[in-house]
Length: 287
Ligand code: NDP
Image (cartoon, rainbow, N blue to C red; front, side, top):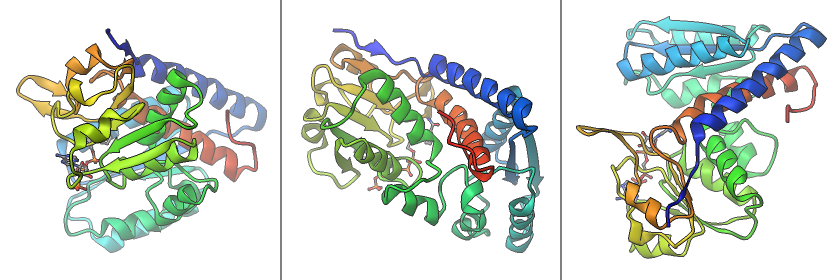
């Protein structure tokens, strides 16, 4: 069997087109243009590339993009002052602080200083709490993108058994919450999990968010299962995921790396910014 290739790149492109149309409509109907502020502290090369891509795609869907590039020496107080200014700025609907921050800064305090309504990364304690209690939340972009791909591929996830490998705050935990929200039966695996292959073998859905090149093997996967590969690993052979490509011989459907989950993340950031704009203006959430 060769697994269906879940084309995240094409899905993300369609999503961005839809968002662009909704942004145009919002402007035409109400004169509102969503604005996303991205804050980068220091000059980490990977972070700089991410921030550039975010700004480019924000502008492409017709939103305002505000880039704040601060030197690595920025103090906690200076950063918090900027966040407070962006919180108060009506033109800014979403605020994203690019992580990781330089070591001398308190990441948690910075994230929690972002107003809940503008926290488009969904990393603040309030949004995490809202997600886990089933209230309206800003949902972290990467797991949100994975959920969209899963729903598109499988339809109703209710009653399916899902294994999420990885328990980070940015991917694994919110992914598990989202799957639970869709009534899947969820297992969260991590580095201390015993006999991970047999845990995975029972799953209809496997989401790998580990950061270990090609760790998930074909004999771990139940024939026909859906496999989502979040991993981005830079190796001498180029970019590879957490899932061995040979899994495609067993799985029913699978995301490639690159071109799977990766492109969904920024598209979901734009979707979250549009949602934040709708909510602050008392409009229904965009479909
Ligand atoms: P973290 O390093 O924060 O978390 C990795 C998780 O994997 C941890 O929970 C860890 O367990 C678990 N783990 C490590 N080794 C094993 C093992 N041998 N068996 C089982 N579990 C293991 O990573 P992130 O969640 O931030 O990212 C995961 C991957 O996703 C990375 O490759 C990253 O680059 C990628 N990523 C991709 C994005 C995208 O846009 N496509 C966005 C964000 C991340 P423990 O908690 O016990 O240490």
